[in-house]
Image (cartoon, rainbow, N blue to C red; front, side, top):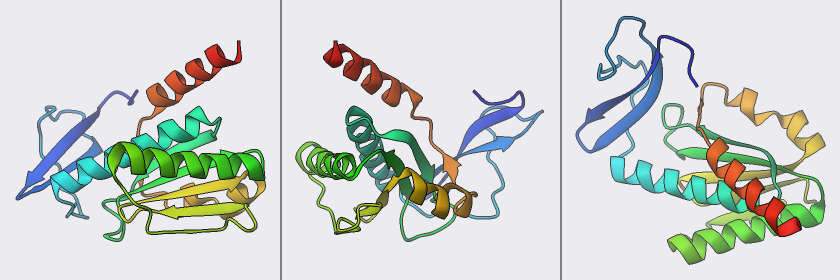
Amino acid sequence: MRPHGYNEVASISKNAVCIESKYMPEAPIDSTPQSDTPCLVPAEQLNRSRTMALAAVKAAAENRGQDIVVLDLTHQTSLFDFFVIVTGSSRRQLHAIAAEIDRALRKDLGEQRFSASGYEDSRWIVLDYGSIVIHLFDEETRGFYDLESLWGDGQPVEISDIVGAASAQMARISE
């Protein structure tokens, strides 16, 4: 929930949609924000990237990934749209999360991973799907690199409903 005065607004230009939170205490909900950093991502690509990121969140949560965060980076870089950041408790769990994300994106969405790195040490596994980049960390390495602070201008994406549903499903399976 946003503090009073914050509205989620969309700015629409030719084939591009940007959604961002702006503090506008007197502005109506449909106001167009004046952004210093334009979003140049076509609406179709943004929707596809968001779908991919949320599918990765679901797969990670169903494999007991912890502290899952999605950052919208469309205003920070043109190299990718979203970061998905996940913590795992062991090498085996990080590998399982990576495999399940690959399976979900390939089977359910038809997406192929461009590259992966970090499997050998399994402290930081990076899965590159082009428009989204997935970072799987052990706890110590995540704290050391602190990508959330490094990319602090990125907008967090609300995922609590996906994580909550996956947690509830895992609890039912465990019973």
